[in-house]
Length: 404
Image (tube, rainbow, N blue to C red):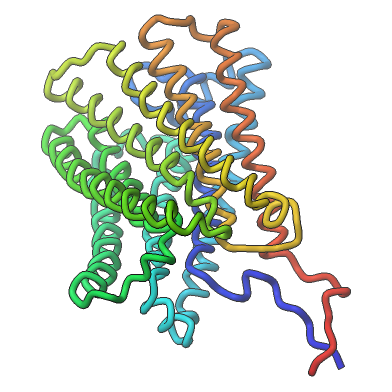
């Protein structure tokens, strides 16, 4: 008699929400093609009409880029929603298990923040899908901004509720939080989730023509973004102290690079806020200042990327959990830094270097640096496909083992 081995994903963890998050992030990397290569005069983002015009009037290279972008967004948005709905269903069942009770009484309670993080990313991804696939959407965009902010407000409420339960438990009672098990940056997940909500709140600031909408967007995104920064600073200090004493937890190695996506998301938030302040309130900033801000953010990202890669290589993480046979739901956290770097490099090149006049758009220097962003993107697509096959693929017939 044999018992079929289950898929790794059948042993549920809230970290599987990161599978949805990664796909949503990859949809954004494809949107960068349209954002920076397709002309969209008079609008902060390209729409269906801009993309259609560029495809009809552009050369082969433009048409190929648009085709790849539109197809890539469709595929990744589908995967984003597919794994989001799977997670919501699995999480509902998980809440009835003993595993959920154990998680709620451990350091790992903060992994529940992967849910509002994925939800916020899905709202952002659906906004992109609307822009590129729905004709005439821009004509009613002002009516959609309040609805989007309501959606992000609900997600923010969920995020702060989870954080409140977690911090309320460990700060009011004491002796509950296991400092020895805090030897990773896993506790940065709440900061990541808050930053994703903040960047969603900031979108109307960059796109709306309504002063009230812009003002509300600026205030709400600033509040949630500030909460994300404060939480991140506290989590980094406490975790680093534990890592110095106990080393880094091997399975949590990818969390060492979670600061990379946080920087990208907050960087986009600042860019959106700056645009809103400029367009609506006539607060003007120099383009060189934007370049330097992005350069600082990118520098922080590269430092933490190098740190994380160094530690994980020393511990053999890649050989075990990426290219090997071991599985960990936390491996999906590896997708976020690569996606975030791809997006940040695109912004640095186009809003930073090109904007400040350091390089010319579409010259050799432009494509040389942009190629780095594309390499990160392609690598993360391969990683997502690999991880999905590892965790969600059907077990082979050889995976059956004798029953006791």
